Amino acid sequence: MIRTASLVYGNGYYGSYSDSEPRIQQLNSCQQTFESEERLRRKKAIIVLVMIVILQNVTEYGFAVNITKISSKINITIHGNLFACNHKNASHIQGPGAPLNAYYGIVATIYYLLLAFFSAFGGYLGDGRTGRLKAIKFSLVMLIAGSAAFIVLECLLLHTTHHIVLIIFVLCVALFAAGSGIHCSNIIPFGAEQVMNISSDSTYLLAVYVAHGYYFFRNVGCAIAFSGVSYLQERDMNESLSIIGHSIPLVTSSISLLIIIMSHAVFAQQLPQHNMTKMFFRIVREGFHLSRVPNLIPVSRLGVLDYSRSIYGGSFSDLEVNAVQTILQMVPKLSLFIIYFALYSQMHTTFFIQGTYISSPNNVKYVSVEVVNNAVIITLIPIFVYVYQKHEQRISSFYTKLQIGFALISLSMIVAGILEFYRKKGYVSNSTSTIHYYCRFPQYILLGVSEVFAVVAGIQMAIVNAPRIFRSIAFGIYFMFSALGIFVSGIVFLITKVVTDTFHHGDRWICNNLNDGQLYYFYDLLSVLMLFNMFIVIGYSRSSMLSTNNRTRQ
Image 1: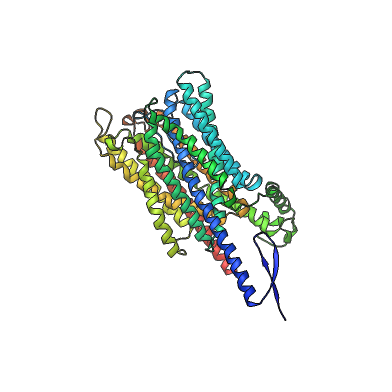
Image 2: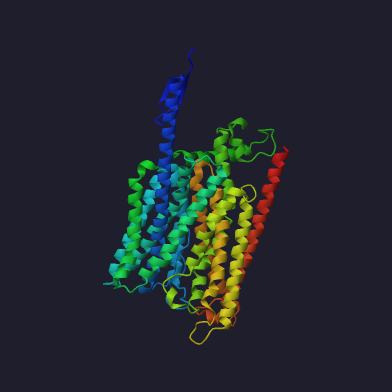
């Protein structure tokens, strides 16, 4: 008697075969060939995405340098990192202590609110409407449009000072906010899809590879923009090098879009869930409605959404309810990053302004000191990945890594405050300090190490915990809170300035000229805010441990 069995091919065809030895060997060989080709195709997809991440970050950070340079020409003084989905761009203020004005508040408000909105909208777009690949393509189109609008802006500045210039400037900001938000919400979960199709490692290790890999290559793009691109863009407007530098964002975004279009066939894609939004709100509505019915279910300690489960008389499966519960439970955890990014944004604002009061060597004139931060991250990430592989169970706690990262960024603020105290103490008549330029490095190094712990931990948590159908939405929420954190930083900055100007006339913390203020107190205030945030993390950690122990006992 000859037994038969079924084989599933990549095209979904089911075939049968005899268990005779030659036939089995032939089919096994075909299956191995197919798996090998599939694995090779997914590896090509990962290589393409690495190129996209690097080019896209060069695009955004190059655009940030463009905007901060052009803003001075249209009488808009902007300082700080206004133009990055991960909020890590260069700012190049000419002269010490460039002041804030009404234009800064308007442009910053527009950008950060749009970035927060489009981050959340990008998650919905990728998971519920177009799919992640199409959302990424759309984001690149927005970045190309923003880069092209900026080139038009430059041409107009040479011939006119009409208000049309301001309109185009705001349009550039809006286009880049849309492109950045949509792109960041989808690029990481889309990369995770490719890795999960070629790897047999645990979910945790997959999250380690994706999160650290993304952040590694993102900082490679940062380093290129902060060094080479900024060098070209800081040239005079009429120099050929400046023309090349200002054209780089348009070129890199166009190359990114061309690469992803040509490589369409190598990507694994998850189909969007078009009824996802309706399902989400129906589960929430039904859960609230049924939970108010008295004595409906004799089971105690049910969550509100549990009432919408079919086993308790609801209309939805456990899988659907669990997905909605998980995404809602992630929101308060991800909101912890608001204060973190409020402190993080100081690297591009007050840190940079502080540096304009310290004499710098001629050989680093065109290289932003933020390259030090990038170098620390690029160096540490391979080491961390190796350690995670060897000691996965010991350091896999999200809250542990978050506490370490929060403590390090708080320490970075304290170090910056100490530097500011001694800088002001040693400044000379020409407004520059006698303190050594390289004394700025420790605060950037501490901040870089904190990113490897905290920011990467947030990305890992979103990959591991978020349901696959809601993964882009989870990252949309993450980057939305990141944008809101930098927006909150500006609010705290302005409130601090108003309060100290009102109640401490002779002892103001923040002044247009740092030598007239006491900025180190502001750094201390930020450090205290982060300590309060750490207490919340500790509370979450203990609550998580207690719930885990209770489930174990049951």
